Image (cartoon, rainbow, N blue to C red; front, side):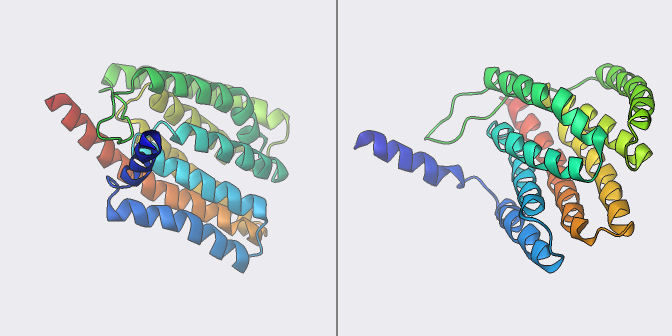
Length: 241
């Protein structure tokens, strides 16, 4: 009985720290993809990929480690959608970078968890990232981008330039997030912008079912923009202790 009460306490407290805005984001993560999916006759796969990825983004914006579990599910769904649209760069980065990055990030965050109080979810320790570290990462991603461009061109990737940029920003944001950098959500926001342009071009080329895939990065951009300020706030609170 005692264990059951603790479990119920944890569940009831999980959303107690969520602001009204965060709860609105969570509801929209379900409603927006489903509504637009019905209107534009999107597949269940497209709708699911969009919804799950938005939920994961919100969890990351709140620095919740369970975001990695939800993100992994969204990654698989998004990979199938990307493959169907011949976005091989997106598929490749998910297989060869995304999956290992999910594992590395989960391990990194697990080691940085702080003890929870009053059955509230544990939080991670956020790192203040130096300009030097950011500069080195930008240089690495730049070199990676040049190599990827020619590789993706060789396998006839659709929307070559935008696909390359999207992959580079994915790598950039993911590495920052693995390192628990306070710039992590900023990296993801840049990736969201590139994905908006990527899926917009697919829609303009005639695939109206991909409209739901545009809504996803738009909402992710809102989430990650919110996350930029949320992570800075959490960092300040952490540094005051």
